[in-house]
Amino acid sequence: MAQIEFQNVSYRHEKKSILKDISMNVEPGDYISIMGPSGSGKSTFLKLCCHLISPTGGRILFNNEDLMRQDPIQIREKISYCFQTPVLFGETVRDNLSFVYSIRKRAADWKRVDFLFSRFNMSRDYLNHKIEGLSGGEKQRIALIRTLLFRPDVLLLDEVTSALDADNTLIVERAIEALNQEGITILWVTHNPEQGKKYAGKLLTIEDGQIKSLEKLR
Ligand SMILES: Nc1ncnc2c1ncn2[C@@H]1O[C@H](COP(=O)(O)OP(=O)(O)OP(=O)(O)O)[C@@H](O)[C@H]1O
Ligand SMILES: [Mg+2]
Image 1 (cartoon, rainbow, N blue to C red):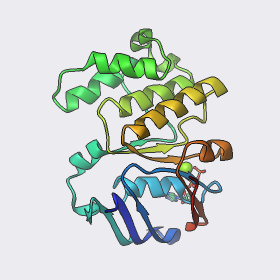
Image 2: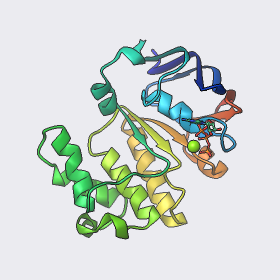
Image 3: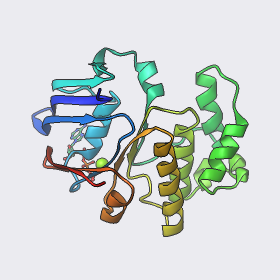
Image 4: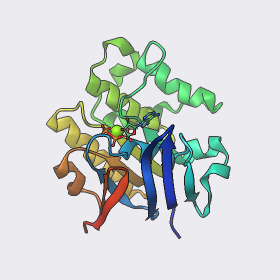
């Protein structure tokens, strides 16, 4: 059974056709790289996958049920989306992480926080850092850690290493690969062809709002 199924999905905004007749399946545990020119519809595709926006045509199924009819709060927990431009809030890194627990009315799990900091090669001292002083690459990693405080079934990543140097990109790539090996489905938009092929099992190419190819890599 497919985990996410696109059935002839289209997305229009005003008169502009942004995605056209997309049909494809994401299987549980898939690791799919998504590539394509700027403006081709990749981020729009990810936003549809987590019901941040709704299709204007066709249907999207998640676990065989219409995604549009599922409880948005549960969808947020099962499908996590890490934005192309990370949005952090509050004053400190700690605020960003504790918020995720408080909105779920749960006690913060600082052991989990420590584990994720070490997985992304960041010192725990960052907890006290002010958001405004963080570099672009630090913001990206904090946003990733925040996304992963609760384990999703599906992780949607939108160019999350674009501000990272080679060493930290490798750390993030390995952390994501480990999550995939633990069973999390990964959909990762990247502009880097090497990154697109290094770990993924499938490569989805979107061009001009349409699927150009869905290649099996291994
Ligand atoms: N809310 C919106 N209003 C107007 N146009 C939009 C909206 N969302 C997306 N678009 C347009 O749809 C097209 C696809 O956008 P999208 O962000 O999905 O591209 P992308 O493939 O992620 O590009 P990039 O690689 O630059 O991030 C673009 O032309 C964009 O301007
Ligand atoms: Mg994009």
